[in-house]
Image (cartoon, rainbow over all chains, first blue to last red; front, side, top):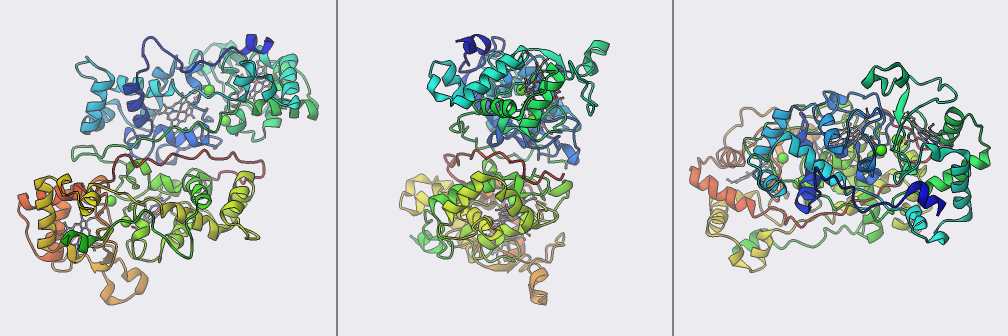
Length: 314
Length: 314
Ligand code: HEC
Ligand code: HEC
Ligand code: HEC
Ligand code: HEC
Ligand SMILES: [Ca+2]
Ligand SMILES: [Ca+2]
Ligand SMILES: [Ca+2]
Ligand SMILES: [Mg+2]
């Protein structure tokens, strides 16, 4: 009950009144999510860095983009991302609709242009048809904005119920004693001051190193967006859903051990040194946030290119 | 009936008595097929170059591997590949079991070593367990060879019935008049001297340029394997199943138009100049070889790395 108050109940989809989730939009968005032709080289899709078989992340410290460029930050999971109050580690996009435009045109990621994306999609009759169905009544629905809207609608369905949600729903026997103790420690130690709400995080910006400075940290975080001195080393509190499946940890993907990440948090954010037993209990609890393995999105069959489709540019 | 004689009946799976297809092996092989950690960088899997949503190919002229290296040849589809008499454009692997070992250790593709693969897999308890189930009775089942055997067993299930197979099975109404005329032209012009059997190809080596030299051709093909003068410019006759979905064409992926590929074939292989109408009819027939879109393999959920899993090396 206390847990229900702190965390709340996971919805079935994360609605956005500005971009209603419809089956047609989700079907299109799913195809586009797997669509390599949204990238300049025609070899990188959203799923390259957010593999749904890897809990929506890529298992790398930082991701590989166009021409094998290594980016500066760890790729967060797309699972449950739509629930968060802002997108990216530094909150520079307000929702998944705005977010999805970023990587497509980022020269280090998919490296396309809006024009190239629209040209590719308009050259493929199946896509033209699917955009008309997903955005009925629009005169020119095959647009860069609607590409992002469709992908975002798909992402709004990617919420992952876990054992913890069944616990919250009243099935208290579903957690082991150790897991329950871990939850208690997680709350009593103060983790929930930041990691709370339905996404167990994703609700506020906080300084990484609130109490003790994190010595290896280079990324200035939200400061890069606001240029406000107080925002140095401030990041979005990440969701801890699926955290046991999405190593490595932190904005630079520098820590591979979840136990070590938990101890780092306790020290840096709460000024507390956890015992091994406390850290292990918390880790046991964090495992209850892993998606039910039944979460398998049947993959799309993508339509072939036509002769007018702009060619891959590797 | 004549068609049934030339082409034969597609089996449900492509059996290999040396590597029996079992559900456990196929389940493991499917995971491994999508497993990026089989590559040095932990970012490239079989599915990177053989996307099942793109009819088992990648839509590039030649594929991108480790550190964005561009390979020399077009990636053929994995769909129905297990039916062919030999693997690769030059036939340098005898079956899909032998083939699967190639790309994993190829420094231009996945760039791993046998040792790295075994170390990664042994560090992940779910994989150790799955290998024991897939290869019961073996003392040390987590091996490089069994990795290839499991992937190959999965590939042996990737056969794609099409409208043409229902036609062969007696449902003659399923092809349009144009498609039937295309089939007739395909047979009468002589394409079936090479593209015959259940995979509509994949049964012999032939010189590309049998009648007229192909002026742009650089790749020496099977000669690279045998160093036999007569094997210069000799390639495996590719299967034409899913050909309408797997542009670009030829061993170097240099031709994007299927109609142009058909005309090139007629001239280079048969010394014949097709009319536009003949070429279009043949293309209409080739479309009947496209997999039923229902062919969607539910993707696997991959197990997380453990702390002893060798890290990605991008
Ligand atoms: C080349 C790798 C790469 C590609 C391709 C890529 N992403 Fe990302 N994604 C990242 C990285 C790295 C971040 C974190 C960047 C940051 O915060 O500055 C990220 C952040 C996100 C976030 C924010 C999640 C959160 O919790 O804040 C979402 C949502 C997302 N990506 C979805 C997508 C979608 C949709 C696409 C395709 C249109 C895509 N990504 C393509 C690497 C990639
Ligand atoms: C004062 C706010 C705050 C508190 C308290 C806090 N965290 Fe965090 N947590 C953050 C922020 C911000 C990050 C992101 C740090 C980064 O990588 O930039 C984070 C990251 C994490 C990560 C890594 C997530 C990932 O996917 O990379 C874990 C695990 C974590 N916290 C667990 C905990 C635990 C367990 C506690 C309690 C012991 C805790 N946190 C307390 C703010 C907080
Ligand atoms: C970096 C790109 C890349 C990766 C990764 C890759 N392949 Fe390939 N694949 C190719 C190319 C290119 C060829 C043709 C090479 C040749 O014939 O010389 C090929 C050929 C094949 C063939 C032969 C098909 C035929 O008709 O002859 C099969 C089967 C195959 N690959 C399966 C796999 C499997 C299984 C994996 C993973 C273990 C894999 N490939 C990884 C690019 C790749
Ligand atoms: C003498 C043997 C032979 C004959 C006859 C022949 N082909 Fe081919 N075909 C080949 C070979 C060998 C290749 C592979 C060429 C290469 O790319 O190296 C090929 C490739 C193709 C391709 C490209 C396949 C791909 O996936 O890249 C198509 C399409 C094709 N043939 C259609 C036809 C048609 C239509 C005819 C009749 C007009 C025909 N072929 C006659 C041997 C033949
Ligand atoms: Ca997130
Ligand atoms: Ca991570
Ligand atoms: Ca091809
Ligand atoms: Mg083939």
